[in-house]
Length: 210
Image (tube, rainbow, N blue to C red; front, top):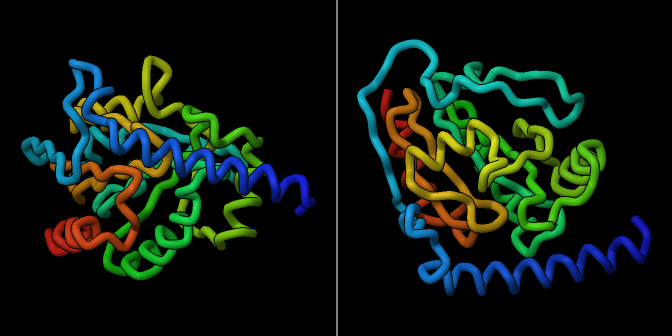
């Protein structure tokens, strides 16, 4: 990694962290009237269905080789969906997300990462992102290609998550916890760290349900 790259990465991280704090502090004043203010514990439930939940009936391209992956392969698991970025003050959350995935994967948890440049903090190619995640944070949980997560260009998955919860990612590392059967989705903001008590308790609550 060159000195210039390290400098720009540090600078981007400082800017992102500062903007993230400002965004979090002023969120209530910037949420469109059609979308409720996103808060910890925003949950929407629906009648349980059979087979692959409608919420997971999407296909995404794997980050490492851009091969199509059906999200139905995660049916029956508790799924954490998070939009990520390499040059952000919250980028260190990769480490906590990987630790969370490793701790609970045998109980049925899977973390799904979706890099996004919606907030101008993910400018590299898919290969560069994959190398960064693996070499810097040892990320082993499933990652997908760069994805739009908000607005008209949002991917079908993130549009569905927004419709379910009434919340959209306001910054990088916004998190959704999806129940095993897709019947409940709970959203958590970017400032919610992977080891946040309420976040972990929600995951453990969903893991306990069969």
